[in-house]
Length: 401
Image 1 (cartoon, rainbow, N blue to C red):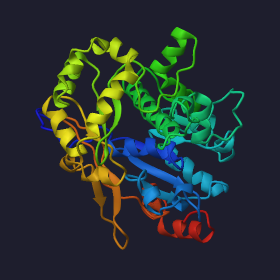
Image 2: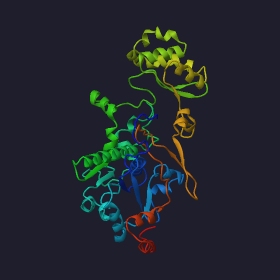
Image 3: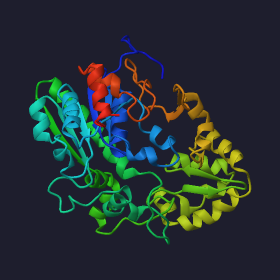
Image 4: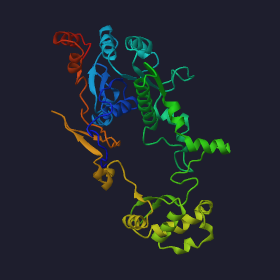
């Protein structure tokens, strides 16, 4: 992105913020990774001997690496009093604590809100949970598929004549992680302005997922009917969706009259413009099946690359259907260098997706590659006043790793 500002374009917006992260798998790690990308120092607390459960998910370590850059791993036994003292020492000087433990687990570790806020009244304490405090489902373990099913997301994912489908992305986790970042930044801003001392933020995955229903909820609010599964079709736009070409499939959303005109020119089908059935957008939606019957044989007559060129030449948005391997060959992705490799000593380099955020006067960073379990234990404890003998004793007693 071209820089037009006059500030220091190497400045990281959260360079003076320290985050202690007691989360695992996706939702919490996705949140803390974003804060790390913005320059925060993220100290990731992990269980001795096991670490984040995603370390054991295949492919390893690629799964873990994808959401755990820019973090310093400290392996500590939080079931022990001394391990809890270590965590409390870190939190006493932190700005943010993000936890995604089971109900009551943080309290059993001596890391509940009341305890930690007494140590550090200015702390922003963020709890990511499945259903939140005081929910009828508070004790139920939350998995992404469960959240997608209960929130209504699964009900609108799939084809018209098929069953509800779980999204290929863990959207429940990612939604909650995104809201966690948003709320933490808001609390830090309020703290900086003197509006609060500290804050306790709660982000339930279930609530967060429901909030993303937006226009689909609006459909039910307005019609008192469930939003239907439409596969790749749009409820109020046509032509819109996947079109099979002679060799491959492409996606074309042509949702305005001007795009419809360009669509017909690209297909060399002026007769469609003169057809009263397709005169307006509402007409095209009402006569969708007839429209598809006209255009599908045309698409099938030429290869995908030719249709993409023709449509784009007419200003019509059109693209291939990439998979998670081919997308890295896309010219935009290559130009923006979205796939990055983070070198590691004595280990395979970590392949990661770069931050999508671009500032004019600030920057993001890929500084700390995903670490081995406990990769920063000694360094972090030393910075917090532990001497070499104390660290060695804690390690010998299996308090840290």
